[in-house]
Length: 257
Image 1 (spheres, one colour):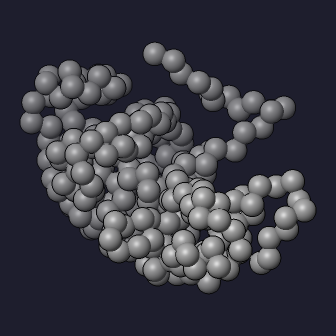
Image 2: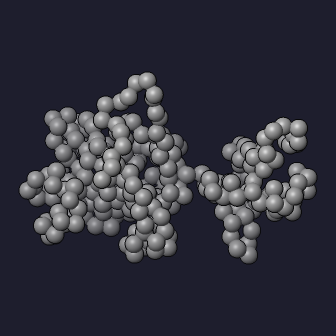
Image 3: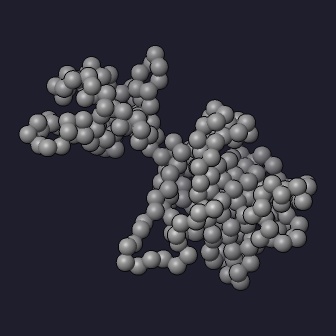
């Protein structure tokens, strides 16, 4: 692409748009060393400042990664989940052509229910039921994406723990093995930071920003069957929300606490 200096669009926007297109169309593959600033200056006939601004935009979008002393590399574009339909991680990955898997960290009864309910107030949705926890790392093509803590009524969680949770999704097992019908979920998404545990499992530094998603799933009889707390690497996962100005969807909105 030759940039058009007669257009009112800033040159760095035109360059970043062209480079973005090239990445998405596969001209540069994941892991490739990206052209240097000097090479891009020569290609587009612009200043170093213009090139740096164009490349910085792609770095901020998560398409490129600068590695000190090594250069700039193409990153894998984050997996995008569109909110609005109740699906599990495995379903989302398979629908996008990725290979999902999981590494199990722990399964078992919640050891200190009173302490756990104090630490996770959302568990009050289960009343005084005995709870079972499934803790795992969810992976895409072998790379860690999510650190998951999933709470279930003991009856359901203990039966799910007997299944192959490394290669099958919880929701498909719920419907196939437990005979339950998933009906709806309430979900919130906030920002958080990686503690020691999240940093270890997601292979990031302590304090790295994370997406925190909490979800309470209900069956078709209105009973809560799962509370999950998911910590996502935002460089590998993002959410997309479709908004309709004229037809607001029941239950949607902003929660301020």
